[in-house]
Structures are given as C-alpha cells and as structure tokens.
Picture 1 (cartoon, helix red, strand yellow):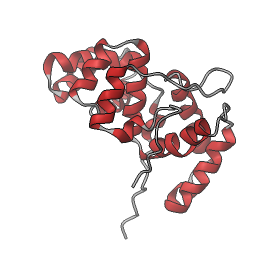
Picture 2 (cartoon, helix red, strand yellow; picture 1 turned 90 degrees about the horizontal axis):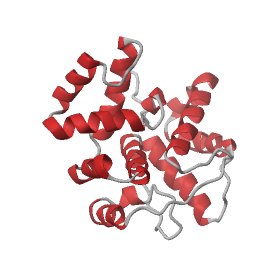
Picture 3 (cartoon, rainbow, N blue to C red; picture 1 turned 90 degrees about the vertical axis):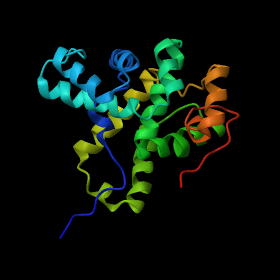
Length: 205
C-alpha cells in the first residue's frame, strides 16, 4: 500500500529567508541562465560557505527551488533592488514554494493586519496548524519537536523579511511602485501575501 503524500511541503524548515545565499545564487543564474549549471558551481565552490557537504547540498537545493518560483523581472529586482524589495521578493518566493506558508500569510497575517491587530502570538500558529490538519491529517501526526521547529523557523523568516519585529509586532510594508505594479499585473495572489492594509484578501483554491 502506497502511503498518501502530504498536501503541504514543510521543507521551509531547512533555514530562514536565505538573503545572503539568494544574492549569491541569483547573480550566478543571471550570468549563466542555467539552474543546473548554477547548482554545480554552488556545490563545487561552496559559494554558500556551508561547513559540511550535506548542509551545502540541502541549503543549495532549498535556495534554488525558491528562486525558481521568481520570474525574470523579479530576479532582476532581487539583484538590483533595495534591501526591502529583496526581502519581500524572497518572502514571496517562500510563499509560492510552500502552500502552508502562503495560506498562513493570507489567513493569519493578512487577517490580523486588516483587523488592526498588531501582535502575532505563537498560539496563532498552533491554531492555524490545527485547522490545516483537518485538510491534511498527516499534519496531525507531526511530532512536538517538528511543530516547534516549524513555528520557530517560520517566525524567523517573518523577522528576516521585515514582517515581524523583535518584539513580535507585525510590520506593514510599503513595496516600491515597481514591485506593486508587477505583482498586480502578473501575480495578484503573491501581492496578497504582503501585509498591506489596502490589499484585497486572496483565497487559495
């Protein structure tokens, strides 16, 4: 009997936002235009400065998989944009890669921002996970250690993306007009993962 595959990928727990690592990788890709070649260079030269080969392979795979979700214009903005634009694009990439994170952004972050709630208690994550376990029963079987790591890494990503400060306060963002126009035209669903007071709620299918 084949075991059912989980609806939600959870490998975002590999690490945080990977801002530095993503800059290194995107520069290599814009120079070559070939993800397989980039992966080879990253591994051969240890461009991500990992201590072990297994960590290098795991981190490299995670960073490349996230960056692959970005369109050419977005990759250019990631290389040449402001620090805030880079952080927001990497957050968008995480949300595109991981349905779990995308739905958390819309159903929890956006709801709290629109309700003018400025805090993000960790209990909100637990409640969200409980709701999702009704959709994907495999989530209910996660160990306490795994759940704790998921919560810890997701909150770390939020802080590194500038969406949550060190005190646990939600931060609304003001993307550049270029980024807003691009997302409105090409991918409105991704615009909705950003905590903007005037952004219409987007619901995943």
